[in-house]
Amino acid sequence: MTDKFTISDRDVLLVVDIQDDFCPGGSLAVPGGDEVVPLINSLAGKFSHVVLTQDWHPRGHLSFASSHPGKPPYQTIEVSYGTQVLWPDHCVQATAGAAFRKDLEIPHAELVLRKGYHREIDSYSAFYENDRKTHTGLAGYLRERGFTRIFLAGLAFDFCVRYSAEDARREDFEAIVIEDACRGIDVDGSMADTRELFTSLGIRCIPASAIEDGLVSP
Ligand code: VGL
Ligand code: ZN
Image (cartoon, rainbow, N blue to C red):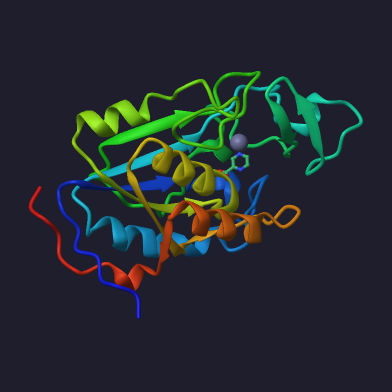
């Protein structure tokens, strides 16, 4: 049986990319992406502190297949910082697809962290961009707020959740992924790779039911 987790004031829930483009009907739909929204809403009620991330690309972003004539989506290319998967155009700044899902209800979220806004660098992680050097500022924010444990939920398990969890560990936070509150894309075995990586880094995957009921006082 999984241990139970009691949420305290040093814990934060990081809700990753619950945006229309990542849900069925969107341009980079994650299968079942919409299904996690009610669970995330109820989980958020157990945390005093919630941060939302929002994928937020300029038009013509380097990660878009459309920026590389002749290249189809889901192929990879080599760029200055390594291998980059090419995606359908998605989460273009201020478009409908970049909006949070209408049914995401977390009025007490304290920060919305946008990422992927540099045209020449993708950013899966909420901490570092894909060059693994450019910081988003989130680690400093979380440290200044005194958080030590980061619980992660959202889309996609094998991309933005994965890289965010990995970087949370690298920044010395405890990282815990709430697996049934995530859905994945699965490009070239990326789901299996993610599970393996989490095991090797000591990143726990738990079900939402492992989180105790009750909200700590704000
Ligand atoms: C994501 C691919 C491209 C994600 C964002 O949120 O997992 N995946 N941009
Ligand atoms: Zn993106």
